[in-house]
Length: 290
Image (cartoon, rainbow, N blue to C red; front, top):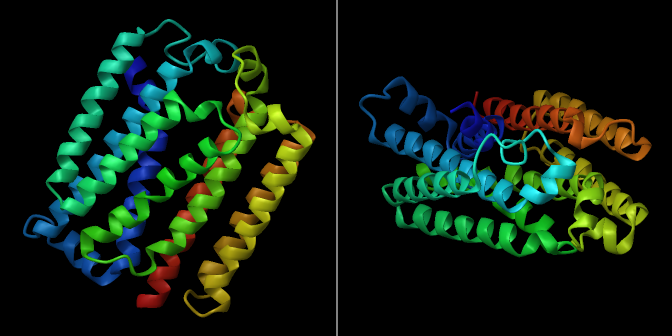
C-alpha cells in the first residue's frame, strides 16, 4: 500500500487539487464561500468535491503510467521510486493507472460534458506524453505545461465560468515548461543511455539553460502584470515577489549544479514556489472581493 501511495505522488495530487480550488476562487470567491458554509446543502459544493477527486485521480494515473514508462530510465535517474526499487510490479502500476483514470473520468462525467471532454483530452495527452513525447525536443515539455494548467479552468467551470482562471493557468503553463526542461537536464545520464532525444541532449545543456532562463524571465514579468493593471492588490504583489525570488534561487542552483533534482532537493524548492504562486492568487482574489 505504501508503494502504491508513493507511486501516485500524493504531494503532486494535492497541489493539483489546490489548483482546482484556486480556479474556482478565480471564478467566484463569494459563491465558493457560500458553498463551503452550506456544504451539505449545496449541490455545487458536491460538484466541486467531485472535481477535486477527479483531478487527483487523473494526476495519480498519469504519475503511475509515467513511472511505468520510465522504469528503465529511473534505474539510473531515480532508483528509489517504487518500480525501479522492485517494490511494485509493472502490471500493478498499469492496473492502478487504469482504475484511477477510469474513476476520474466517471467523476468528471458526473459534473458536466465540458468537464468530461477536458478530462478525456487530459488523459489522452498524458498517454501520448508517456508513450511517445518523452522522446521529443520540446513537445513533451509543452504538453506537461498544458495539462498542468488545465486544472484551473477545470475548477473555474464548476462555478460556471473561466473569469480570471486564465491568470494562474498562464503562470502554470510557463512554470511547468521551465520545470520540465530543468528535469530534462538533470536526467541526461539516464535519457542518453535509453537513446532519448530531449532538448538538452540534442541542443546542449547551455542552450537548455538559456531557454529556461527566458521562460522564467517571462514568467516573472507576467506575474507582476495583474498588480500593475489593477486586477490584484499589494498583498498579491508581496507574495509574488517572494515567489519570483524562489524561482531565481532555483535557477541559480540549477546553473551552478549545486543541487540535482534526482536528489529531491530542487524539486522540493520548486514545490514551495508552486505553493507561493497559488497563495498569491488566492490572496489576490480575497483582496479583490473584500
